[in-house]
Image 1 (tube, helix red, strand yellow):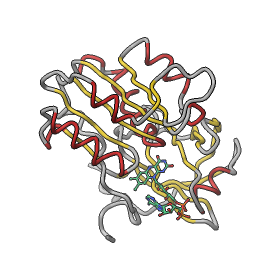
Image 2 (cartoon, rainbow, N blue to C red):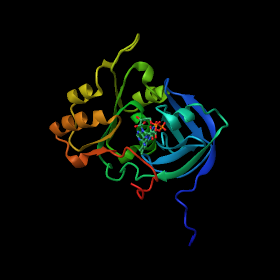
Image 3 (cartoon, rainbow, N blue to C red):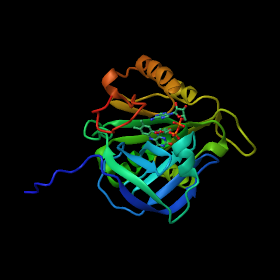
Length: 237
Ligand SMILES: Cc1cc2nc3c(=O)[nH]c(=O)nc-3n(C[C@H](O)[C@H](O)[C@H](O)COP(=O)(O)OP(=O)(O)OC[C@H]3O[C@@H](n4cnc5c(N)ncnc54)[C@H](O)[C@@H]3O)c2cc1C
């Protein structure tokens, strides 16, 4: 038996193996670190002199994080280059309830950088295809330039239904222009469906209203409402 108690607050320094520019404000960092985690869990990521931010795993099982540059810590992360070191602690959070989603038609609904944690769930289902009946992704971005994970999305289109929308089109865009909720409104969901949301809070309310009208119960809708994070383990708030 292992009698050692894990210190939940211990920060480990890890090297950034690769930086991928996804959009003008989103960067993916491939970390030189292996660890076991569930899709939907997150790390507390720190940069010396700036602080610490909660950032979800954006892949599976590889340890990658995708960060939107919105302020102090995320701005410092945006300046990192290959070979730089950051502090991490975790994984934290419960992750997506993959056991409860077993056997269902699963609909992932996301907007903006909400696609980052969703990608870890998609990568999980790419490895566990038989766990669910079907997978569909709805994703909305402000413009085509703001769509991350382009290479993944192109591959996903060959494997499952991917429904994209942008608020503003640019040259060459052939998809939907408007809100992602327009696509959800016109979609016919089969019985036994479950939806997982991740994105801007403004999207949640409208999406939940539409899905309820279409027969989803509260239990069929999984949404992360946690916005602020300090200790990461539910002790401080
Ligand atoms: C469980 C969880 C998972 C997350 N996963 C990701 C992820 O994968 N990628 C990503 O880019 N972001 C993610 N976030 C949001 C990220 O933690 C915040 O954007 C970040 O902490 C902002 O820190 P900052 O110092 O750069 O911004 P600040 O300079 O502190 O503030 C800039 C703006 O960000 C807002 N903000 C500050 N802290 C938070 C916070 N903890 N949550 C939400 N908004 C905040 C402020 O209200 C302000 O509008 C996640 C948040 C949580 C709680």
